[in-house]
Amino acid sequence: MGLIDVDALKARLTDENLRIADVRWYLNKPGAGRAAYEGGHIPGAFFVDLDTDLADMAGYGAPGRHPLPSVEAFRDRMESLGIGSDTYVVAYDDVGGAVAARLWWMLDNLGHRGGAAVLDGGINAWVEHGLPLSTDEPHYDTARLALADRWTNVIARDELAARLGQVTLLDSRAGERYRGEVEPIDPNPGHIPTAISAPTMSNLDGSGRFLDQPALIARFAGLLADDRPTVTYCGSGTNACHNALAMRMAGLPNPILYVGSYSDWSRSGMPTDK
Image (cartoon, rainbow, N blue to C red; front, side, top):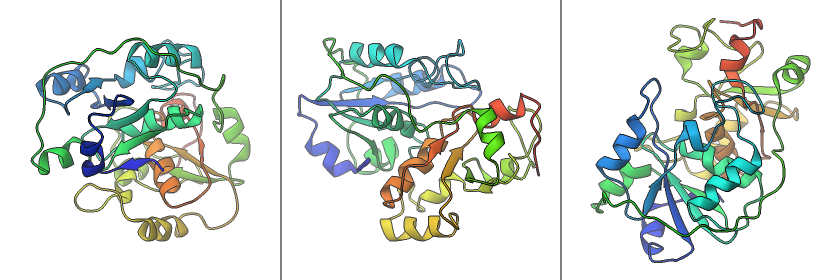
């Protein structure tokens, strides 16, 4: 469904169709994710860079800090890492899946046949289980990956602006950013008008693992008050995928992703609330 636990991943390590992606990334710290990977990662994992592998910083598609790459560029990169149509992909990070969920969402959105999941608890859970890390970087033969030819279930700024009040808009950022108390990177602190605060970290328990399904159902029952379509956003279209994953785990319809997110909205002179 989108999550895998440490025991299940450990049991699959010898599966030739398994690929593990280390997607660690840190705001305002270029290169820190790669450095963390080189310092120790789950055996067999390769590094996937949010900025260069999961986004097109030249600005293809939706604007914002992490616009989606073209499907062709994404497919080519995944194939070069050895991800083929029958490959099962497990993504992890060290922030409860908030970054890894972006890779899960991209593969899921494009209908990846082999399936994709986020490691529940990430590398922290792996270490807590006493399992080893590696500094070896694997290299796989280029694969062939069949994907859909376009991104779907996404929304651009102008369309969202026209539909405010007609959709349930979830702000996936931390509460203090939603309230405009702090803003580390984007102009005009605050949130998009009509948005509801739905921090991604509230999808997790105290150990950094996802809440169970009944708890997730209860969480979203308090956020989704009617039958309007749901749109999820964050700062740059990354953490918002975590709410999409949580909604999947709760058995809810897939939300629409505003990829440009607050980085696009706030830099375009659109109105904001606090």
